[in-house]
Length: 392
Image (tube, rainbow, N blue to C red; front, top):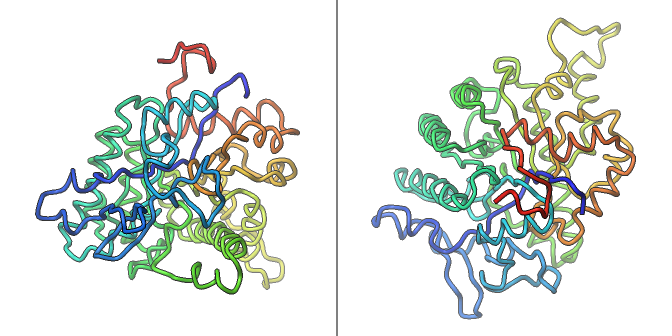
């Protein structure tokens, strides 16, 4: 382990059973996501009477079997997945000073809530999750980066929730990178300007987590019989990562960053290796690939907007951090572990960091592992290094 703290820019909470049932009015309880133990002894989340998630799928870190075998119950998951005090102990053991927190059950863009037909209940579900997150992090708010969920289908309610959560000290906003998939206006539409303006005013970065633009699909499970679980899983991963690259291209070509120059956006869990190609393609096409003698205008190029306002997270990659740092905006790269998901770093965090950043300067290394995230999320500096007990 390194002698200095790091910041983990993407982790998840495996939600306990009472997230919604304990926090919404009684008349809405039956409409909420609900965890039940089925006849096989498996904890399953249901919504509208249909299963949406097995609890163990959200937290296989440390589980001795490999997917498709997962923990059957919440209690079999790693305690740090669902208990905030255990999470702090896990962070201490691994030299992680602070971590950003993302949901599971509602989807990575809150899209599962769209299945709730009652509009008032749907809003209550979002507020209940945010209230849960606020409660969960009370053990040490310095070290948990709270990313709020949004009722993105209602722009007025979205703005109100951003303002409410900003007042509670939340440090980021979770949004879908593809609102058009849910019958809503494209990102470029002025419909979303109140969201961008409110987030910019509050100094809250907007986050596109992979999978946040996904509607209902059986493609993953449909592929397993013909492709096998490893092949289907790997295809799903590549598909999700590359989709976030497309969403980032949409963002830098949308006019949003031109209109809101102080807004910060984070592409979460999508890696960084795709960035140089996407930016080169965006600039080449934006300038008119087939126009002889094309020249740039006075406007910032898409790549320049990206470097000014967009952050990306990485974890397992070795090629990009070792070979592409000269082509990457190192002031906009964050490190993550994805704990406690299937693809997370677990038991190999610092070895992976060292392998990827073996040729990086200490200055670049500190930016990626600490400074970029600390500035973005206004993270308080710890009193001492890992292991000295001075930070409690």
